[in-house]
Amino acid sequence: MADSPGGPTGLTTLGRCLIAAGVASGICAAVLNERDLLRIGIFAVALPLLSAVLAARTRLVVSAERAIEPTRVSVGTPVRATVTVHTTSRLLGGGLVFTEALPDAVGGSPQFVTPPPRRSDPPLNLSYPLTARVRGVHLIGPLTMRVSDSMGLVEYERQLVGRTALTVVPRVTPLSGLPDGFGRGEGEAGSTGLRRGPGEHDALLREYQPGDPLRTVHWRSTARRGELMVRLEERPWHGGVTVLLDRRAAAHRGIGADSSLEWAVELVASVCRHLLTQGRKITLVAENGVLLATGRDPEALLDSLATLRPSSQPGLVVPPVDGELFAVLGEMDATALAPLLYGAGHGHAHAVLADVRAWAPPREVRDAVPVGTPARTLSEAGWTVLVGKPDRGPDQIWTEFCRRLPLRLGSGQ
Image (cartoon, rainbow, N blue to C red; front, side):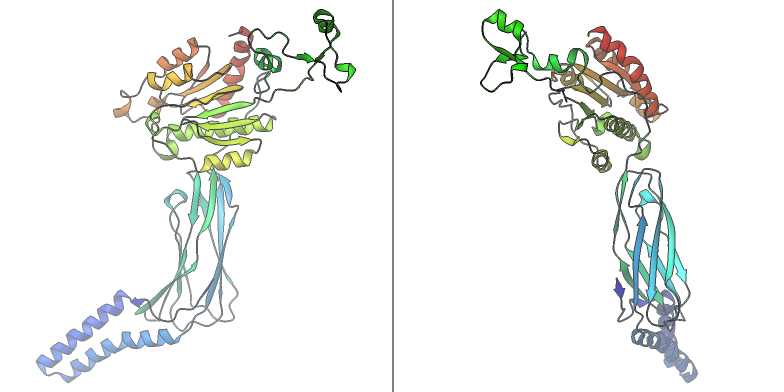
């Protein structure tokens, strides 16, 4: 963006002090009848004003562009920003001061001081690192330029470049392993069981209709019923996995990147990414039942988690689940447990309970509900329950989940 300042932004502190001193000298000269002192006062006042006039007549045309590579990163990944500055005329004065405004989440605002440019100078490249420690969409900029005259009495300040969005998605931890049948509907909650209701032993058969191929005729059922019966084509069940993320502000402890909510978001991001790479369909929902992401695109899912914010929802709303339920939960009391126990009609349910007391400051530990009580309640209801702590990463949680899940699936619960 080009910039052509047409006048000074204002006098600097030095310029204002010089004018004040000149006015004071003029008053003293009038009182004391000292002509030499009056000349000094007039000079002190005229010098900043003359500098302002000369600065206004000096046209400095500056253009700049910002490049950030990459513009989409995960938490903690270093990024480098480069600003290229072009000048098309010579500055008769002091140097240039460039300031890049940055949000606190990516570090302090860098400032660059350069000597007065000349027309023959090559483009100026200003580079600085960025490290985003908090997920979200951070706006980098604007870039402002401040120019002063050679004596530092008058200065300009102009905006050169607007804002550039930097998308920071949650950190994803590589996971390994996948329980047999998880998310595919195998076993007791498999494709056959899903298509049958209670007492419907022949749900995979129907009466023959003109046009049905003879190879689909089920001769044993035809002999038993006395009419032609055909079997339905086997269709894979794509119930997938519903991931429930509890983002209630009251259910989490800690501040910023070190909170239990950020731990839960990182776990959900890692699990969803792993399941998607394994060909599973993911449905991500929030604690209030709102759909956050669905389908098989891991990048779209991570983008939805990047802008996720805590909610004031008091309890949980569990939507109907057609396959596996994997819930990552914060602090759970009896009110929050009720929808999990009675509101979802799922066959297999799994939960990771964050022990929020491990994230809470010492004065808040006693106010948090012990994780053992909800863990025991869910386990007695047939859930697979794991407990999360700050020192347990997503890979450790997932390894334990894979080790325990086959036992549960084989128990017929």
